[in-house]
Amino acid sequence: MQNTSPINILLVDDRKENLLSLTAVLDSSEYNLICATNGEEALKLTLQIEFAVILLDVDMPIIDGFEVAKLIKQREKSKHIPIIFVTAHGDELEFVTRGYEIGAIDYIVKPFQPENLRSKVESLVSMHRNFQEKLQHQSFDTIRFAGEIAVGIAHEIRNPMTTVFGLLQMFKSSHDRPSDSMIELMLSELNQANMIMSEFLYLAPNKRVDLERKDINQLIRHISPSLKKLAEDHGIVLELNLKDALEVSIDPKEFNMLLLNLSKNGIEAMQPGQKLMIHTYLSPTGEIVLQIRDEGNGIEENVIPHIGTPFFTTKETNKGLGLAVSFSIAKRHNAWINYETGDQGTTFSIRFKPDSDR
Image (cartoon, rainbow, N blue to C red; front, side):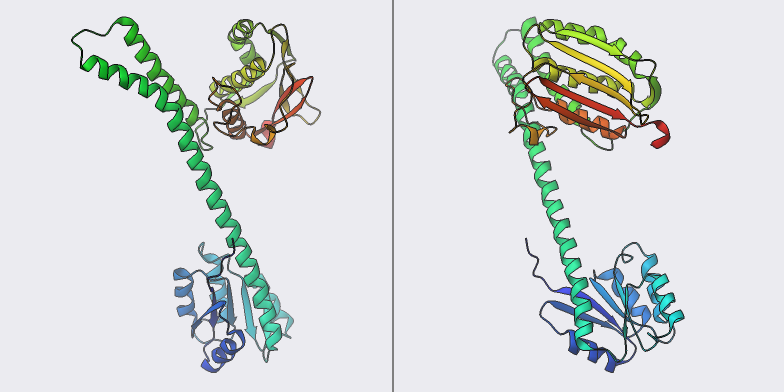
């Protein structure tokens, strides 16, 4: 997406003839040249307008170019703007050094060569355009992602809410009291909607975590009866291979959800009689590693790019949030997830950094 709107360039010089000279050299339909005749005016403009580059004369009365540059670099809104000093002192080492220390990226020495000036400015303008286009693409990607999330939530919640709405409409036109089974059905559907929203909240990168120093093996053993029951319901054998005490700062509730989601994903990928293995160990680099391995047929190649994408699923009864939530939990704990997959099964490894490296 090419941005063709003119780029703002600020020219600062107390001498009008110098400004006329700069504007004559840089005159182009691609540039919006804005002039300031003193430092105070330049500072006000940098707060009001976004500039791609500033050409700043050093020898100005009241506030010289060095002081103006220093103030520009101190302000959050303008500190990123590249500054080119325009001066007659470019051959003085101390003078040049001071400018670079303040934050200038280049010098133009008077009298300047027009082609040299144009080349320097064009280079900085090109960098500015590229940066703005990247930001714009990121914004569009964020908006599109948010839209996909909203559509996914609406779709998942609409089903249980439609059931409840239909039953309430039926009871409204009837004099009979709802049966206990109907009430249970409505409560179940509302609970399903609530669970979807709760899972969605776990996707938030800034969700608060309550960290505690815990041995992850103890957490796994504590939840293992639930994991074993889930595995047995699918005819799967659960095998634990837990090494010595492995302590890390972690939110126990989030860890349990991470373990449950990845285990459930592995269990559902297998046939009865196959095995799900949960393994923990300390890596040579000091990382605490949780490994979950299944014996399924592996992840299909066309599915791999979508791993961790909210609401993407290949299963009819799955909401597609489990892996997305797992990746978010890992990120909040300064951990990362990698995986290996093939026709002999899939292994997810969650690597927690030592607390000293966090």
